[in-house]
Length: 164
Image (cartoon, rainbow, N blue to C red; front, top):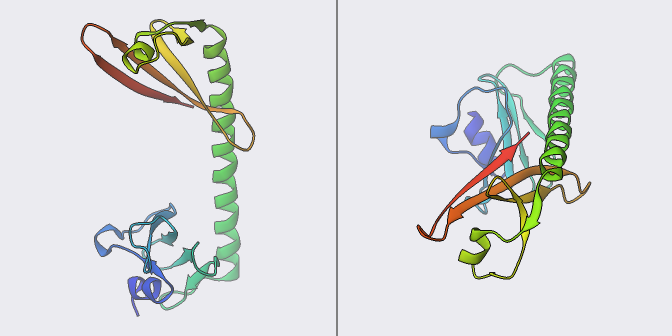
């Protein structure tokens, strides 16, 4: 049985053209909903696992090729935890950067708001850019700042998102 067959048997729909060895977890659709992102898998070229959020939400290990030893599973879990810790630290740095940037912004009118039909509204503006803070819904910390710019004459806007 191939890894793709194993995934389909367990409800995860992996596009064969997108399957390649990687150190990252990838999201994909499920057999029931191919366009959803409810499936996830890990494949290192020899071994892997699948996970279906819409099903039993359990990690199912592919054991047909070279089986994972318990030690390798523990090492992989530690590696994953380290990556999550590094990601959390990057989010914390992004939050601090966003606070510094937003501290310098002024509450005033902006052309983007006028273009969108809100001529009386005010927003956080820094260097002619309208700043919209993006927050983590759980912690309420800043995750990013979306900057909107544009002119009334050209009726064009430019958006950019600043991540940590």
